[in-house]
Image 1 (cartoon, one colour):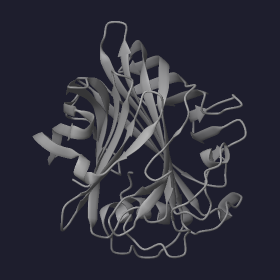
Image 2 (image 1 turned 90 degrees about the vertical axis):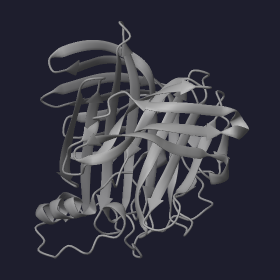
Image 3 (image 1 turned 180 degrees about the vertical axis):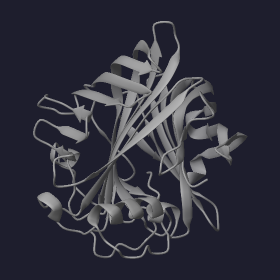
Length: 356
């Protein structure tokens, strides 16, 4: 959930050599723009794996998104993010060479209590610089890789990225089933009907090495994969979102998001994931999600401390950013970083905030 349409459009125009003028942006990142020629997201999709780990022609946007909450042997905490976005210019199948109508975008970041580094990559589809393949699963852009040689591709993967200030090489494993978010993978994003297809693997365990500013760390901890694709995931009235993935010490997992609106109350929903992988969709009336404290980050007031209550689950917690300055200072800016959880269900997780 993360694209600034104006910037992305400029990059797209540059890459395709087009001189069209930019349309008026609607909602955050242009995700509220109508996409009538693209395939709509409707209830009742039957997911098929491993095919759905790959790209989905006909849909306008999708992403492969990994976060990890890590510790070294001394207990120091870190966060890692790896994301690959696919953005289609036209609702057609992938074509070879410069006839390809797909733009790829990669984001990678590392965060500690005192440091946050982020990097980005752009690529044109069709020339081998970026893409996703299902057989011997691999998602890549330049030398950033999320790849597996296992028959079940999401059981054993390697994750890597590097930039001038950081690098990481992680091994991700899980024997747990995937989680379909929302209504069997149909994830509503607004009361008007905008939605995405959305599944997760929240049960990854990660281990490997992390380098920050020339210092190397051996790290391990839980990781979370999100997969979403859509053609219009927001309404024109929605300005951005706050998204949370939580790893609780009890073994349970929680996904929450709210999409903020220009007018009216935010749209709020989530998923409670039991330690055995069973899920329960959380409705807005079951959740209280309240910003508690803010920090000035990149000239913006960002809520970096939250309280969350889910009375049906006897869940009453506080979230604090590990590093309040986890600003993704890229061409497409947003806040993304690890959080610490205290209260009834201690743990750790990740917070993303866009549109501020």
